[in-house]
Image (cartoon, rainbow, N blue to C red; front, side, top):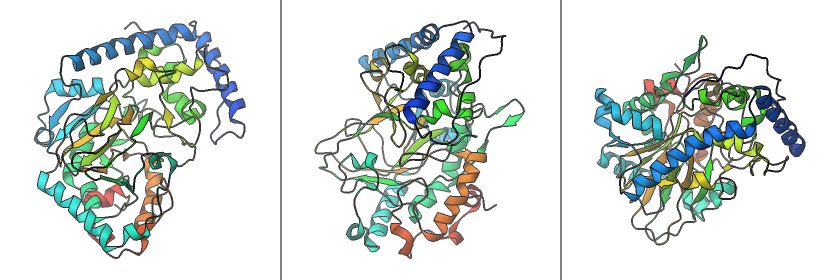
Length: 430
């Protein structure tokens, strides 16, 4: 596309590095400033939005047509190709276009099934089900789990998967898809992960689950209101939307995220999970809108005239970023399920991708996963790693999650002496 040159200085944006006390007033102020900044570039908000809208419309049409033809939408690669450095160029192009990926055979199937059994034994030996007090957050509580999401972080199985060479190779491959150096700054180290600890999901056969609505997780109002994110999304708001690159990490590893029960203190290039059971695509699985550039659409949509001045299309603090039919019907047409997966496969999606989990009734088979993202070493993740080390040492729930702390007294949780070099580097110990 032809680049749009901006020569005159653009008006500055107000920013709030901490959650504003008066959210409606701050929203009104930043929206007015963003509109003025776009206008100063010589284009209207509507003109800029129409550029990204046309791009997204074309992608949606191709995705819908592929589904109707029965063709796969999610790229799939073999772990053996990652290890050998032989991932086909076409697969890499598909990954960058779609922003999501399934890695077949990331771990041997029997290894994944053994980890699943180990997690069951770990929770049962330590009386987890007797002690469980119900969902610790409103978001995952909505699935109706009993439990479905286990607030368990430090099992030997989880930690062995996080610090394995096989996991590190896939994370490095994914991180390398990002532009991680620019302007003399190395925004992150693609070859080193920060071992971001997350939970597990175990959904039994016959279960009913309400699923999770379409949303995304890189932030909430901070995406418009903090200086670092305003720089990260600079091309969205300075009249150069043609230059917006969803794979550019510049400034994303700097900024804060407003506190809340759904926040992520770390920068993740990809969210991800590793399958601990076989799962069919129609059994309450993950869906994404596989269009990384849709983030620009979402950032501009609240600036259009049909959205009230104190509203960001429903985005607010202490809630996930919602994507709903009322404001985003075009995007939701592209919502696409993962293919069937087997235990040991892993599933990945770009941190900006809209995603959901479909509801299911009377599920066939187990639906079990370990949540393990790609969270490369960078200043933001290094800061969070200090709190992760403290939580690991005491068996506490990490700071990003509800303070449930079930594992503090569990004697067989993973121990510091069991860390390998990958684990030590990931926790900032080496």
